[in-house]
Each structure stands twice: as structure tokens, then as C-alpha cells.
Image 1: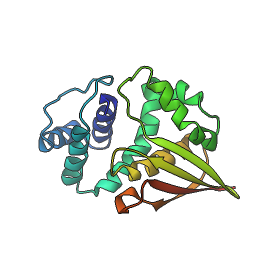
Image 2: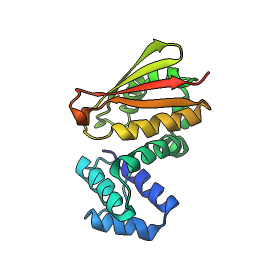
Image 3: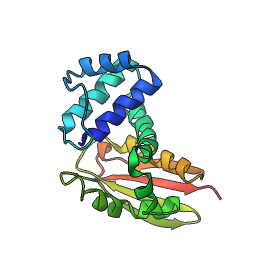
Image 4: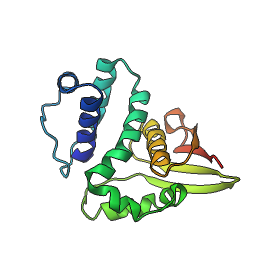
Length: 182
């Protein structure tokens, strides 16, 4: 994953706790990198090790941390200079979801080693949608829940999200039912 992800994890921990807690997490994860470069690639194992160590140090389940991080990520990337770009891919929650693959394609121009997930948003009628999330990376479904919550805040809507199918439970990909409050 790109260093931007690991930097965001660090910033979230430092904001919610402090830099000493981050140092403890980094040491427990056996990660020697002191400062992650946003545009450099790092092995996925580094990110997974940081999340696992954060779970141990903070006493919170990994899924809970990933969900919190997903919500944080939505706001973080907007603050890190991607807010205007995000605005180009939809002026509503659903339009944005429908354009996630296009957005990732746009990002890959500056991040050529990006291995983004694929998304498909299907209208189920009556303000309900199904989001299909396909990724080569395992275990990140809870992060998508957080991303969806963060996007709902960004677009100032109420959304009920249900993680209907999980790759971790044997499905070929994750699926989320989303219900938009009228």
C-alpha cells in the first residue's frame, strides 16, 4: 500500500491518543520506518502489522479499528489535497459510489503501483442500493463500512449500512446493503 495509508493510520492514532501510543504500536508491529512517504509503496504486511499492533495496544477489535479508520480516511484524504478531486467524481453519495472505479483510475496516473479494489453500485429501489466490493486484499470489508459512513457525513445524508456478504466468510467478494434515509 502507499505510504499515504500508513501515514493516515499514524495521524489517526496521534489525534485520538498521542505520539507515544503510536511509537508503542510501531514498535509492537516491528516497523522501523519512522516517517512514511505518501507516494512510496510499502508491503501490505506493514499496514496489516500496524493495524494488528494497534488492536493489541488499544484493546480494540481489528474490525472496529478498520471501520474507524475507513471513516477517518474519507476526511483525511480530503484534507490531504484530494478533496477537490473527490468532488469531480460525484456531487451526491450514490453518484460518488458509482464513480469509485473511475476515481481510482484517475489516481493511478500519479500512483502507478496502485492496486485498487473494484466497486459496483446497484440500485435496489426505494432508496436502497447494493455495493459490491472486490479486492485482492483480505479483511478490509470493515474499512469499507467506515468509508461509507465517512462519505455519508461528507454528503450530509443518513445511510444505514449492512455488510451482507463477506469474503472473510467464504463469499467471493464483499457486499453491502445501503439504505438512504428519505
